[in-house]
Length: 484
Ligand SMILES: Cc1ncc(COP(=O)(O)O)c(C=O)c1O
Image (cartoon, rainbow, N blue to C red; front, side, top):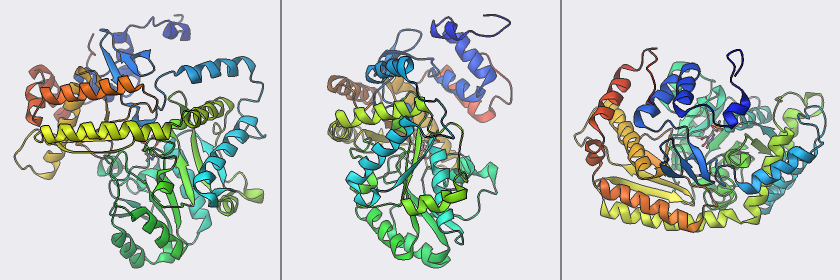
């Protein structure tokens, strides 16, 4: 280190101790997030043992079933990193080709559209806009839709939906925790009940179909806790919108490219959307790639002629991200990972159902499709509680369940818009034996916590006390010292 700066090479050589990493991350970053995780013993940093396993500073290993569905091949998968080494040595194409064409961008656009057109032939001439996150892909989608129907003013999304946290996407993410502080949000955002086609028809009728820009829908809600809509819902959304010329945006950021066992979950459920957003798996857990795929007339209405810069960004389509996206898509296709996800997911869901039947006082419900699996816990406190407190109990239950799962060697995900649901989203290429071991560990966790109350009583009192203090008072700007 020199002049107080940390050298990149020191990070690579793991010169920073785990305690120093936590301390710096808290001090200069999102303090309370890391502190909350630290109180639970989940703050890491975690280091790769294999693509699918991570270890902490004590050497304790976990199978990684987290990553918010954005880690399709595990951490630093050799099929990607070896290709990247070649890319870094041999690539001559310009890195940030904002004002020129790019072989990488051109190739990934082509492959994405061809893949989509295989499932939905009406998309064979669609066009792609690249960006660097899911929420940004949604922002693009909302602008394409609005440009298509400029006089309409309402956009409809669904209860428990999650589309991201930038202003446009946030306005369509009906979760008071994320929205309330930021009101007024983007005007015209309306919410309809997920899975209820009649409710959507009523809402459209109420505000007038010609006033509706778009309907934005997740084919299966991920952050909402893995909610699978009733059969026919998505097809019905498509028919209803087509009848009135309303744009349909399928948010496939979590479901797309294999996670749910299909290339495009919307297509599998009979929906032919006008716009599809993709992100998470394209970046292979290594970098950020977002994509908004749009029917050609709609694409060109917003970006046609002299308006071709009406929507743009600096980093979308950069060579490194596109190269990762190319290789990522190639691996998904070569290894037919959607089929693998469907197969392993069915095995996993069966095992979760067995656990729910055995431990009904722990698991209220289990759901899933492909490798998007959910466990919904019964609240730790059985007595009926008023709304706000109930939410706190739900959150505490799943947070402490996460901690217990870690102790059992499983890294899981919370669900951003469903406090009582913990999800398992392992890599789509996880070896079968390791997947079995993952499910064995979940079973051991359930056996040790046959009721949700046991999650609480099995948590060391010191941890519960510090967490309660943290939850009730927050750190109030006080930076507490991290563990270690
Ligand atoms: C369906 C869906 N849409 C949008 C997003 C936002 O993506 P990002 O976190 O990359 O902004 C997510 C993230 O979880 C998502 O699941």
